[in-house]
Length: 104
Image (tube, rainbow, N blue to C red; front, side):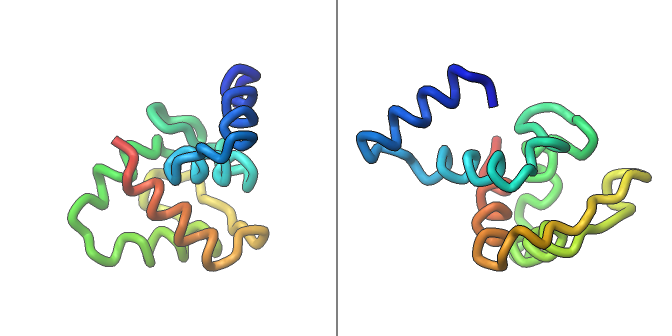
């Protein structure tokens, strides 16, 4: 996260004005998701907006993605596997999956 966004987030936290979407972006940063993913462009893994588009309308998407966040996966987005993320608990994985699916 760049310094400007970090400063804005810190200011928002100080006044208690953090929206759920911004808080989830911060969780993604904290859990190292942003090392491989970005909101609007492919890095090592797919852009979050592309994941949201792929799973749009899938009622089981939150659970599928939460499982992939925790346990990893391979083959859906190419040859590079997504590693497991044991530092992410089940509630955080669902929160992150819900946020990813909301990205436009």
